[in-house]
Image (cartoon, rainbow, N blue to C red; front, side, top):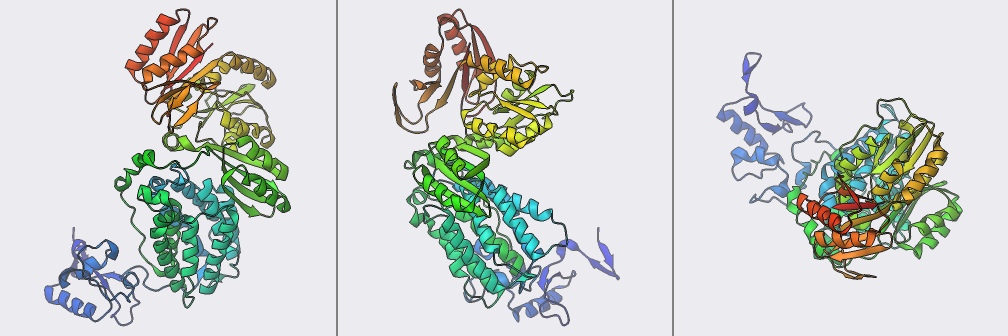
Length: 634
């Protein structure tokens, strides 16, 4: 419907974006013309022609519309003088640039950055091929910034620059995830260290970028070029024109873009995959956010995820990235003087070593094959907490399940028992089975996406019981679970279950009315009577006690490692059961996961019935990723 304004008719769909640069007494801004006749529109065009309004269109009549587009995405458009920064003269809100950054401006910058990371998280994940194709850089950087935003937003409306800087430093340190998140945390902490007073000028911001580069490299034991570090250094070097705040942010962003484009030439694994560095891609978005806040530049669009969907397949053909399997992370309360000794001890244990922080609190990260030694070295320096152990080789698939998992009720609407059970599960069906067996709170996670100590602590607190049993159901998670008792005001015991089927067996001896110690003894004894087996697919070539394994082979795993190898799922199932089942066994539990099928399960039951007639057979749908079949014999 037309809207009447002082006797004139305004047609919203016909209004056009114009620049009000030539209007006397009106600040430069973005405006909309009224509906007008052709001669009036031509008058506007004439005014436009006498200004620096960009005209990318091939016809004057459509130049204003095309001028609103991002120039880099306009194909076939005539190019203007390269000395003119086109993005600074596009009509936008606002057209004037900031001369200093206030506390509110800095808050807006980090909030905008978090939004960009959230929008492009999956794109950045797809780019990740170094040091292993773990596919989590976008997720880790996003979670790190969301922690920052949460701390900044908690301050309220009226805040000082020092308060915002403290919130950024604390939020990034406590919320840092993964190698990229820890490095990003150190960069943010370095950037704001010199910020004081009520605002930040161009010189202070440029100095902060240099400080961020230096501190980030100091935090990494063995810096590698072609990564986020190269992009950070280029940005610091590109921000040396301190004549205006706008020149600093534009110089940093433009240099960061160039450095990102060069990362494939610095790192062979990137060139082989045909991508730029994922961490560097995430860092460039920080400078895009700064340019948006300072100069009003438009935010970059999110690339289509389908355009890089082939990268998942490329991972299988990449050169071997290394043999380090686990990512270990934790917060460390330690004397500052003892941290160098931890770094030295870690040098012989792994790679991707990053230790950031100060004043008694550090965020520590390493890729290693020896999880126990990595944590024990930290015990010599102080007290590690919120320990996370991640299996890098399997992370990408399980991460998808954890992120997309349906959240089951954490607290049933029943009175809290004397002793409650918290279980770590992977797979919707597995979670439902655990709840029917009496588990009061579930934590999503598994072999690769290990939950943090904080997540398990939260689950324990929701049970409402004064005594709690934790079932980690994975060897990697046991160390994390053992930290919980010291962090809560209830009695916690960990039953050392290393698999889902051991967790099932333990729950058969669970008595909600018994004490935590009585349950711990009974459930531990029950779990020991189960022999567990797992079927999965090999992700790399290796040699085992039962023969060579090739990428793509089906392998059967037991307590002793690889027990069976086959090129078919049916074959590995039968071979693995032949190793697991003994004469004294009476029950076989089969848990179907992703990759299972009715045909394979039927063949499995027929094989077990024919070869082990003494066994009772139970089949449950677990839905777990990576492992199409889990076995438990008891």
